[in-house]
Amino acid sequence: MQYVNAKVVGGYRTGLFTRTLNPTSGKKHFAFTGINPQVMVHKDLVASVLLINHSSDPAYDRTVSPTIRLYRNSREYLEAPFGEIPSHGALERCVTKLFPQAESYLSENQGRGLTVAHAPGVTLASLHLLRSPKGTTLGIDHSRPAYTNVVDYL
Image (tube, rainbow, N blue to C red; front, side, top):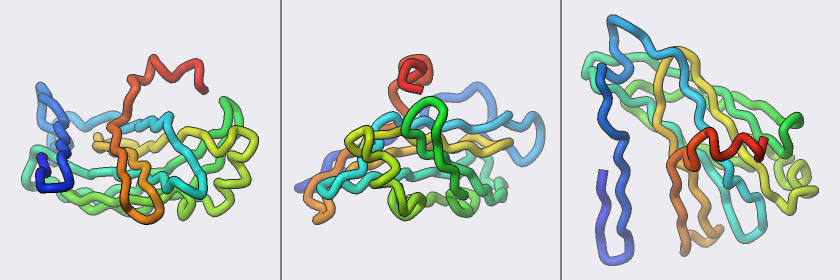
């Protein structure tokens, strides 16, 4: 996907796969785990997670219900249902709507934490957003850095 206009330049690519992504028949995917190591809860920032339930199979029709955890350190987390995502659909959820106590929960880390989303049996795409409350600034990231780069963070 690519979006370009007078004020916005953005793009997203899921990459190449050697087999059908989320097939309706044949070998199924094991699970999706998406790590967002850049959650910040602050009066000047709104953090959210966007999950995309996509497939390279036009007949794909599975609705998924991921779970998401908000970590403040390697052992302490809150968990919540992310919500239902229809096939070939997407859902964005604000961290403070998923976890109303997020600000106080992350206060010992100056509002910083990480989220881990999980969905068994499918592959999802994930985007992580930080925006100003007035909507004047927006930062978007894919599940990066790679899992091995955040091991020490957990």
